[in-house]
Image (cartoon, rainbow, N blue to C red; front, side, top):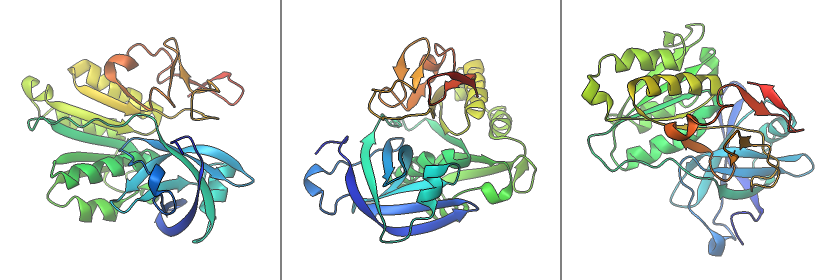
Length: 283
């Protein structure tokens, strides 16, 4: 079997993260040891809910025993069906797919993890891996309201003494009032020009947030990586719905993670994406 073969998996753990969001844990080694591939932070899977649909979802966790996790927010028919799964129910998993966040080995690098909403899912996986490697990092998480913030207790316990954590909400109900890019702008004002050259930003979340971060990193010449979300039917480069114009790059095969230099050439970044018919719509 390959990464593009659907494996039927039983859900063995469910975690309530916040309002309308759950994490589902399943074991990818059980009965599939010969084909097992270790995922890396930033990669995704295609999740098939029998009788409903197959959709892309970021991997939010993975341990040494082959337990993977995806974090689900109720936003449509398939995610609603997933949200209502029980322990012991079966789903189909195809993956891991896509590229991943490549972490610099340079000790001088100052790492920022910046996300919003369900975009925190792959960043949680990245933070876990950095913490395992004793790499300090700064986390900025944004949400509309306090009940939308994810992984607060997890970050508090798992990253103790390894990271700084900053929260913001649109309405000021938790943390700083504002958006993640606002906090990032405030923080980098404390860095000298030379220090800014040692920053690396890993991000995922609403594309307008990513675009604001991209503009800041372009302005200050900061190394930047963003995980993009696009509609996908296939996850293997056939449907073309996730194409980025004018480069023709596919989020499912060439991404989902793209660096600053590539994003400079993507004309629809922060502006458009395609719907299920292939028509461009405003973000």
